[in-house]
Image (cartoon, rainbow, N blue to C red; front, side, top):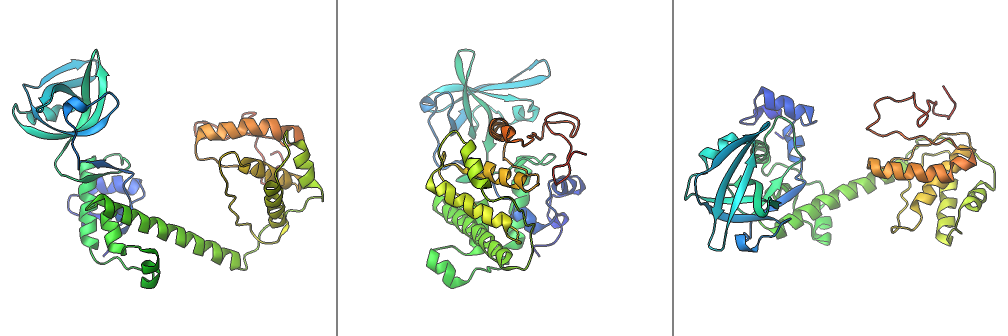
Length: 353
């Protein structure tokens, strides 16, 4: 049931099916594994008088007058005053013409949004109109699928999978670490019954992901898969340390020695360097690059953001370039690879093409 096509879900027609597939989601199982990135907490509403610019909150209000629409360039701006027993403020939406029909004077509404300064007064800007209560999931945006439709599709997928998700984690292991059951975890990761249920669900899913990662690493290390042996002269480690503007710590020396042994071994390296901010993890990464270069190989240092990639690039220019290591930068915003001085075209051994 979990591996059936999303077309079996009510409301997922050809257009939405195509949108899901473009996002890499093809089956009910994959949709259930598409977890929320955050949650809107509707459990506690805030009185209007208690709002401050910059706050994001849920407010229970009633419409205090007629909604007004006006156009400004390409924007359709909808404004209406909303009130509660403590204050009255203005709510503002952009390019949502259907909202005016919902903004009936006297109607009570639950809104969730951000408070901003608007020309000398505060306003609730582009709030969502909420229908439920509790913790509402917020998913990464999928082009072509409105947030409400996405939540409905996930709920339908969960209903199809209810009670059918096999729990492959041994029960004694779950009991030992106080972990909830798999079906409970998936349901409450999307639509939590409470903050406690959400915490239990997220803990179970995170534990399972880390456990599977550790198992995969152990299998990888115990396999017969061979890696590339990188040979470099004795003393290459010390030569790198001599180039640093600071003396390495004993821990840094020990970790680099272990990395060097891995590079020289005939098996693929599977190592994670862990440490606090400022402990020298980047220095170890640069040292490994220097050792690989000494053995005639090219290296790639990956970073999760372009800002961090550029910071590493500038640091590498200062430290590695004087050692004769050609340093290049490749980021997602570059429109062409191979024609600029920042990323010379080379083969995997570092030779120019």
